[in-house]
Image (cartoon, rainbow, N blue to C red; front, side):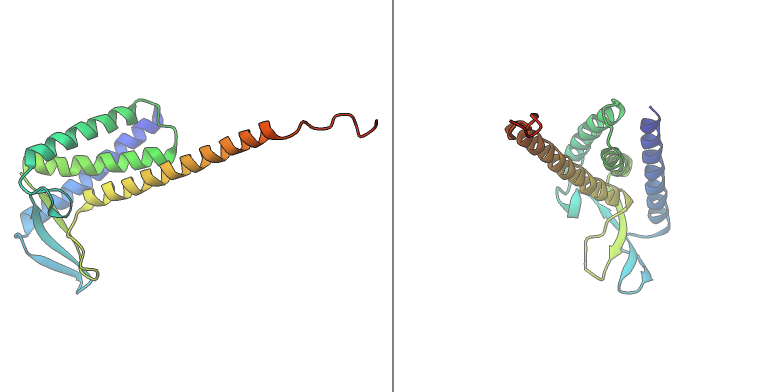
Length: 175
């Protein structure tokens, strides 16, 4: 139960940080304004995203709200069920839930997602803290799945090798 509380509090802290930064950007900047933190490398640039990742699904607000809500509800139920024992899995789900809720709040109350992290050195899409949480959480989830699969295969292979091995010679070597 303590682990569940840590996950939920961590998610709330991340959601709060995400919303606080978005509030500052939304109230202190105009759309398209940019503040170089490291000129030509990293900027804070205000963008209103009406879609999903990389601006896909523009104008599909209600579909995005509906799908996101269902997925987040499922993840929250699973996270709070007590069946999540692996710390890596708990961390990944916490990050995904926090990021998903952060962007869901934007879609519901603003009608768009506030994006502001502008990594210009690689000419990447502008994103936000919630996006970082979802991406990192998804990468950790993938890592968890791969590790679990490899561990299960190794266990299965060891069990199979044990059943196929000849019985040990218990005679002491004498005839």
